[in-house]
Image (tube, rainbow, N blue to C red; front, side, top):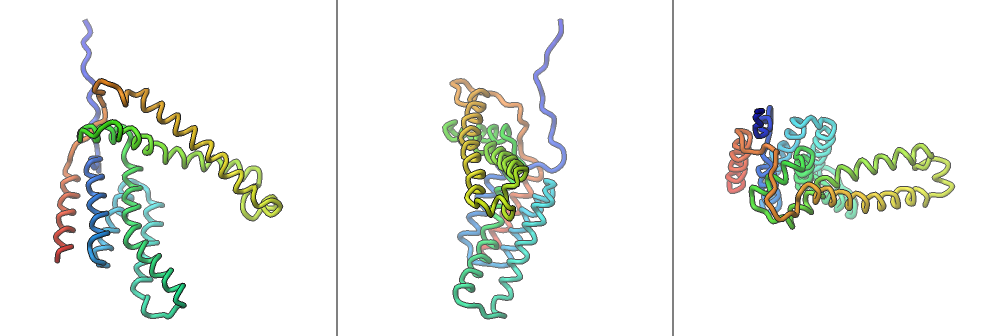
Amino acid sequence: MERYEAYQPPAKKGFYLDPRTKILFMAFVTTLMFFVYENLAMDAVVAIIPLTLLLINRQVRTALIYGGLFALAVVAKLTQGMYVLPSVLNMISVLLVAMVIRLFPIFMLGYYIIESTSTDEFVAAMEKWHVPEAFIIPITVVFRFIPTLGEESAAITDAMRMREIQFGTKKFWQNPTALLEYRVIPLMMSVVKIGDELSAAALTRGLGGLKHRTSIAAIGFTAYDLIIALLSVDLLVWSFL
């Protein structure tokens, strides 16, 4: 008689962070950036963290763009007293520089979490925390919604390019409002359709059921999670110095 064994998911190889570590670390960084007095050295260290994580995740293009923008913001911050701008431009410049330095690392850390965490891993992590399914299902839909919406937007852009409906073309100057019409209306229809399909897919997989569902997603804490924890402690101690 043939014997069947329970499926054992393969062990994670290489760099891997538990989804719970990612979420807690992002909450910590967000709190640190909002409540700690402005410290350019600490801001630079915090900014390097998502840059490193993006490079490890092989998102080189995104990491280079982010690193370049942050470097420009730091240069602008250091040279603000070397030139005189009109009051309005100076206010806009200070606001943009502050947003890039203080908020951009948080946004990029969130982007890394979305790109590096699968839906199954996120659901398994939330169930480990005993989070109610009324919260898990909407967040799960959002996790899959954002990348799918990006694909739909790219497809709409390709279709508009094939019909030469884009900024600067002859058809654009003949009817500028057509650019908005052909972009927004299909995107709105896609948003409604994607939301319905992802919600149905989540319910089909057993989310929202009365019985406890199992998961084959292999999650767990590793040495890399310990490194992130120690880094968080170091940043916390630094913030009080």
